[in-house]
Image (tube, rainbow, N blue to C red; front, side, top):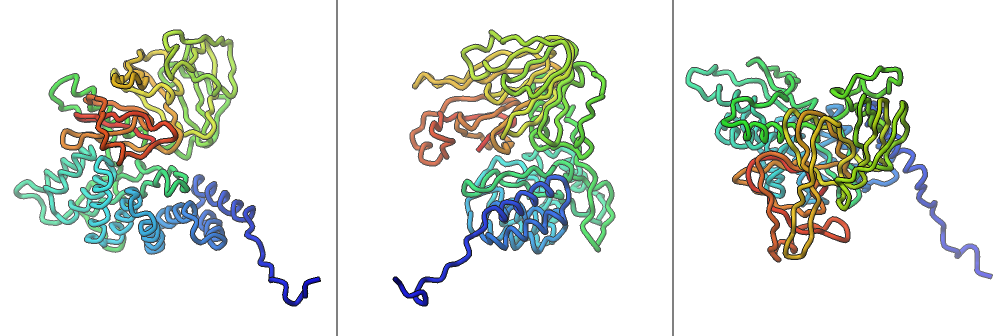
Length: 453
């Protein structure tokens, strides 16, 4: 028998269950706005796994939300060091440095974020705000226009006019960074309501003691546009970007099962627990297999016009009643159209109000006889789109066309022209989304594209 004194010492095994308990509790507390509890749980999780990227990312967001900017800076510097090619990390760190008035360093990280992903609107917004604070007005205008921040653009233009007040307006800083969709395939995206915090200063007063809380950046749409067609495209693009960035408000946490049917004009309500509530008086289209429960005198019919496409799972619920829809493991966002249009990849379409018109308009790759089934939806009404991960909104301008894999495309709108790109060189730089990376689509013009990668 071996000598017991010479037997190797046994170390205590890593307790995966305890780690996951702290991690999940921290995530839940964060999503519900209980930041002190989230911080405590996530710090406990980090003690067990100091290098876990998921925990570090979420802890950095908690530090940011609680104004612990130095702590958030330490976290994001580490994440940027370990993941130098993830643009959202550079963008978030730039914003955190901006909040601490470290403008020169913030500028470098934001410029790097734009260098990695030129079409990401939030990086341009943050950099435009930074240049506005630095009084580099022309540079500020370039980035704010690209971000679609029309009110901020007008404010900068007013500051540039002769006779404008000498005192600079209070710094305008969004309140929350955008969580990256993935970090080396490990970090789960956390939705934290960036639009609630995009605020615009209304006065020229400064508050040296702390960063001010600016008023809400307008979500109203530009009306002075040259033609009706341009207006519809521009308006729909702005709405699409807002819809993807927007989140459920705190008052929507509880489902009011006793609420009366409000009619087709107020059909959809998205609750924080992920359920989509649909109240309707005639009919509504929903994805097959997502109906959790329903009430009312309803019958369900197949949509023959969508057979043979990725949208063929859509069925029509006819009658008057209420449906609760839930698609496990997927993100959902809502969009209201007002005589506007949007193209949605058929597999991402979750629900559609009956007042909207739709038709399948595929994008064809003729060289290999492939296609992506995009459904053009237009008119007045609401629709719901679901994605497998937290989506990105990518702005497209005449100076910044966008190339994207067809397997990553979720939706697009605006004055855009999609064409199939068959350049072999692009295969070496585009990231594959799963086993089938699809073909490459190039968007040119002015609008917004929603991507899952």
